[in-house]
Amino acid sequence: MTDERAYWLAWSQIAGVGPTLLLRIYRHFGTLAAAWAASAAALEAVDGIGDMTARTIAAERLALDPAALWATHQQDNPDVWTPADADYPRLLLEIPGPPPLLYYRGQVALAENRGEVGLVAIVGTRHPSSYGERWTYRLVEALVQAGFTIVSGLAEGIDAIAHQACLDAGGRTIAVLGTGVNRVYPPSNRALAQQIDRQGLILSEYPRGTGPDRTHFPSRNRIIAGLCRATLVIEAGSKSGALITARVANDYGREVYALPGSLDNPQSRGCLEIIAGGAQIILDEAS
Image (cartoon, rainbow, N blue to C red; front, side):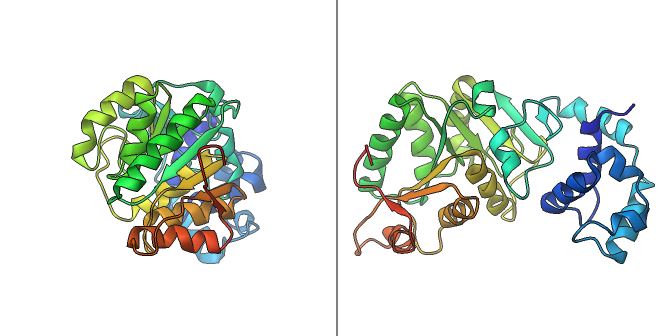
């Protein structure tokens, strides 16, 4: 019998079947193996699949052998979880579109995957002020002392500062990439990624060797939000990608906090906007 994980990979190769639709397919049929064997007519019973999509799926399945595809894929990507794995992060299973494949590199802590250790996301601008840097360190140190793991996206600015502050405080940090786990972007963060590899974990929904693509980063943000019980936005302009993470976290029913800043600082505008919209305000390390 073919491993259920192979079907998560195989389904993810079919055009038009993204993570959200794939989760609906899984829930409708109970297993992706059963869905793979379903007729086009049976597939149309899934919300979001019409006649054309069902025909596309039926045609593309003919060219794929899930077992062979999985065996080949594992040669280059041995460290990967699917929702069929017991070690797949539980909080990710609560979101509408969990990644079908979650690649990892570094030191796995299964208590984090099981939700027994709290994960907190810290995100923000790539161009922080000294105020933003200082408060990132203060907040991260307090969170590490309280036993939380810090999650961010290994981008320039607040992301990198949050990861480094966590490592400096002796805590665990998780970096979620928009590239393969063996490709670091920006390259200036390679040394930081090596530290995280030794003292934390690097995650991605993209296979090894995948390079940077601007379309990957908003998708990456949903994973950051989905892994965490709370998201903290330190500094962010009105169009910052950090606000995408905050909005997604709010949609997932997770807590969102923001650091207030000066009206004279454009990088505080986004934080002030989401505070006005209902995000909880950070007043000190204990709030």
